[in-house]
Amino acid sequence: MRRRVLVSILLVIAATVLTLGVPLGIVSWRVVDDLVQRDLAGRLDAVAASISAQAAQSVQPGDDGGINLQRLEVAIPPGGRLDIRMAGRIEQSVGAPPIAGPTYSEQLVMAGGGLLRLSIPADQVRGEQLGALALVGLAVALSVVVGTGVALLTAGRLVTPLTDVARRAARLGSGDFRTFRRRYGIAELDRVADVLDSSAADIAALIGRERDLAGDISHQLRTRLTGLRLRLEELALHPDPEVRTEVGEALEQTDRLVTVVDDLLAAARSRRAGGARELELRPELAEVVQDWAPRLAGTGRRLVLDCPDGVLVTATAGRLRETVGVLLDNALQHGAGTVTVTVPADGPGPPMVRVQVADEGDGVPDALVGHVFERGVSTASSTGIGLGLARAFVEADGGRLELTRPRPPVFTVFLAQREEAPVDPSSSGSGVSVDGESVDTAASSSGNTNRR
Image (tube, helix red, strand yellow):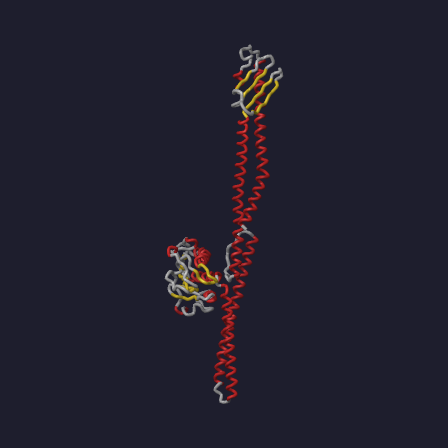
């Protein structure tokens, strides 16, 4: 897209140069030629007037035929030559020696029958014409430079928002339901961004309701089936053999039903994990950190990423970003101080990789430590859904999410790793975030200590 926009604008500039630049060059060439001819004609008029004035004063004839040649030299351009032919007088010349090669000449017939010819070298005129063409070329080059700059700005203004919107649509398709506040100042693109945000919120709510419904149904089914089996096992002690036979068949059907429920749930989980693929961890975390750093900066806090290059995990990009986003939002709402996203170099190794999200707050109260991932559990004003949803995202990709330290709080995401990834120890460093730069804001400020 960017290339097409640039090529289109540059083609317009090229057409403008051909349409205006070439005719302007031709006109400039001819204007210089016309100005030279007019200048020579004006000088001849001045010479003729001087000669007529000298004749009117009845100057005594001398060696110069009665014409003061020194008074005529001022009218001759540098490098020029004036030839004078007077009736009944000797031909005279003033100025440069005879000019070799092409010349520009202008002549004037005087009233008394004399003839004046003023000539200058053609090379001198060519130099002025080439100078005019150089100015035209400079103007054209400046126009091309300015046009290219405008093309780059226009392409960036159009292509960057379109690319961003396309990326957000792809994230929505992969299960990343975050909304974004960024708008572009283009009414149509802003409208698309609003629709994407509203769609993300609606889809997230729908999936959340479906997930809760599936969980509730599976829980209720298991509970009822367990109760039914207990009753049947009591009936299996009945003294009547026929009753025991029927109860045995009922127990067999109950076991089959339990197996069917387990298989359906396993199939649903496998379908959710079908989009998991091998990802490089650092770029995904850097993108999330880049999104959340300004929000923490607005509260006077820092966000730091410490992750080596080359760490490969098996996950769904959208779910991974959503999970880390939930943990960062949790730290923003309920934590304090610097927030760090760390991938320890001394991790457990294959088949798991750790991603730790920590802050400097007071942490999770003891009463919530065992229930922090349960839906609806929160001592703050939040809904208590975020951490449970984040755990569901991680588990769908074959990982797990744990609270590994309550105070100061550390949440750890364990991600699947097919094989040990090549890690460059020199690339790891504290306080590194997007593109190797630290996402660092002002000193920390405190927040609520209770977590969702």
